[in-house]
Length: 87
Image (cartoon, rainbow, N blue to C red; front, side, top):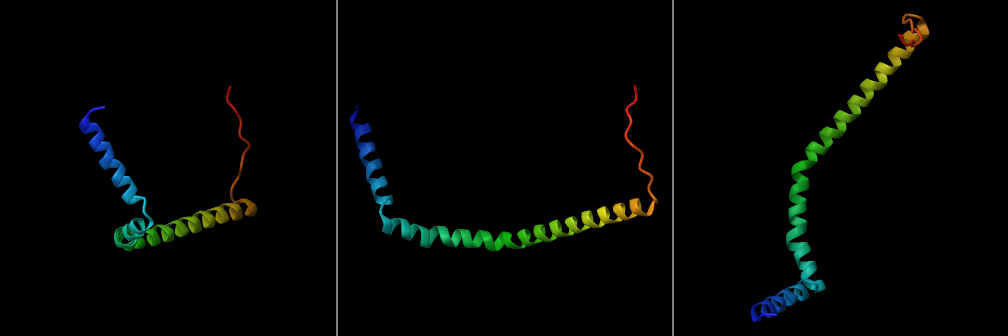
């Protein structure tokens, strides 16, 4: 093992030990990660709400369509023929 490799491994080990400390992890979380995540969530929250509303409207449209089809079948306005194969 060369001198440079030992030196770089030593520095890497010190960095790992530094970031494994609870106080450092708490500081990074509270000062860096939480503000970044809060900013991202504030920016995408309206889009999440929009997607939920669009999904609810789509589900409502599907249920209404299904209801109309079932009502038309029961009223006898739609003639359903059994599926037959050709051949």
